[in-house]
Amino acid sequence: MDAGVHGTGFTARELSWQTGSEITGLDLRQADATAQGTIDALWQLLGQRGILLFRDQTLDHGQHLAFTRRFGALAKTGLLGRHAPPGYPDLFMVSNIKTNGIRSETENAAQQWHSDQSFLEVPARASLFRCVHAPQYGGDTMFANMYQAHDALSEGMRAALRPMRAFHTLFSSRTLARRARKPFSSVQEDELQRLSGALHPVLRRHSDTGRMTLYVSEQMVDHFEGWSVEESAPLLDYLFALAVRPAHTYRHRWQPGDLIMWDNRCSMHYAPIDYDFAALDAPENRRLMFRSTLA
Ligand SMILES: [Fe+2]
Image (cartoon, rainbow, N blue to C red; front, side, top):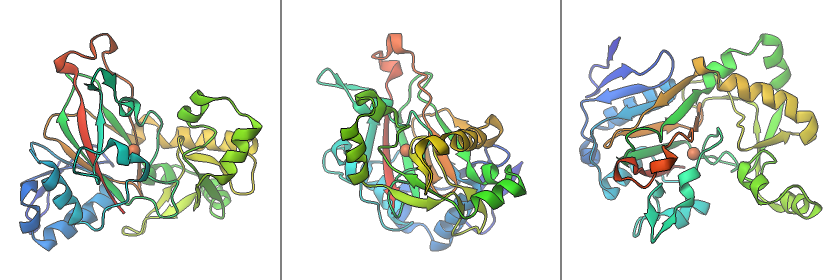
């Protein structure tokens, strides 16, 4: 159904039952000239729908950042700084294209479900991901709706989870990268204690919509506060599986010129590794994306 939004300067069409809206009628190159009422309406819709899709936008890096800034301050890129395009430290480049014969480590980014920067005390509010080159197939991004995950919990389970907090860290025992480096050792356990992470409520209220969300992710969450990793695992496994049930997800097949804005407070995302690996270096399989992040 077309859900026209009147008086906001754009039209919104739902991408799936609960998740995502496609926005038409806006030229994002004109970010600075866009009415504040339009920006406010986009932000409000983002909180409700989790992701907004803009198609056929041919932005350069400066225009991408100018549009991002209309919604607030940019997040520090932190670890991602080394993947910024030259001259644009606030952008994160994700690509499967080789540079000097070497493939970017970002090719395998987002192989586990997560919301951006949940390992920080104050995680990123939203992220804006822009497609320059899309493979002929593969390179999709999947999104999970964390309102739906919360709403699928029984009243009894919600009551049990309500007082609980979970520890989010980039060095979670579930993080593939960490496991690939080395199995558990006492040295790594000591390291883990020192490395940064943050405790967040398992059930969180979205600060704009007031709706409750489930806030745990496979990539970042290591354990519940006061629980061991082992004790936490069965319940976390259940919650992770519930969150990403197919009925709670939207899968996006990218086209050049797409820009997707997602709300990290009520969604998770994931990159299925669905490339044609046998022909990854063929020009038609190139993938080049840029992300900006809101603090
Ligand atoms: Fe991400």
